[in-house]
Amino acid sequence: MGSALGSLDTYDYLTFVFLVIVAIAFFSIAMFILGLPGKIAIKRRHPHAEGVKLMGWAGFLAVIPWIHALIWAFHDSVTVDVRRFPNDEKKEVEAQIKRLSGEKTEIAERLAEQSEGQYAHSEGRPEDQQQGGTKDPHGRKGGSA
Image 1: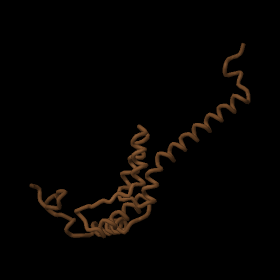
Image 2: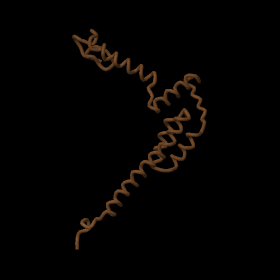
Image 3: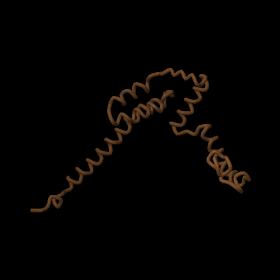
Image 4: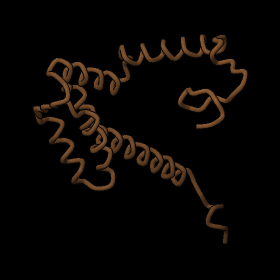
């Protein structure tokens, strides 16, 4: 009488390989389906694409948020934001879509240039080389607040 592991044959190994392939396929299909509402919203340039994307992934916990995200992705919501004019709102939505799509936006490029310039110029400025006091986070000199 041999051990249970000693009697493995070719069909047992094929079964293990098949189970691994099925598990990988299941998780791949699940990832595709969970990300589908977000991809649809980004493709349709939905103003709330990020919210749709997050709710689609929340569908992992329950089915209802995923269904809601899928419906929301196809819904042409008219968002009236009183903080911005319509052209500004359109530009903001385009910037969000570019960010969610992985494209660089003008704002991100400007921030990168500013941060590079700030680090390059901050080392040699005389106001950064303090003689008498410490500098607090708000840029004030002196030891007391």
